[in-house]
Length: 130
Image 1 (cartoon, rainbow, N blue to C red):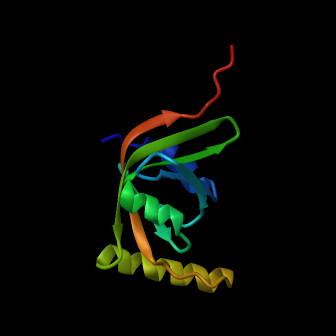
Image 2 (image 1 turned 135 degrees about the vertical axis):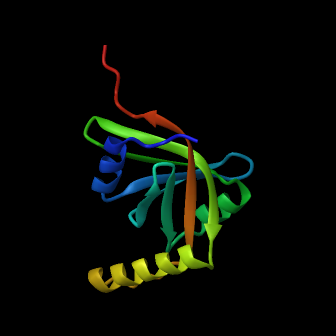
């Protein structure tokens, strides 16, 4: 497993939206913006599923995903394998979090599942000039 540094975690928490990339079993890519995200620990990210259709089907067929995030010239890509939880303590906590977010924002949000990414690789997205 790969571990995020404190700086990576700081940037992840700072950016409002990350890009979750998936692929079908035969390799057709898909990328979607995600705002409902949080760090569980140095090796694990949680993303709440409110709107996933094609993305969810892709993750069920091919659990290898990446999450990319950046600000200015600093950014990171986290690659790993996901599991999808639709019951249990972690899912219930995610559902409560999204209900609270829904109330705060006035948007009709409902979590359908907690997507748990175990980080296996981390890459810098910083441009190399020269």
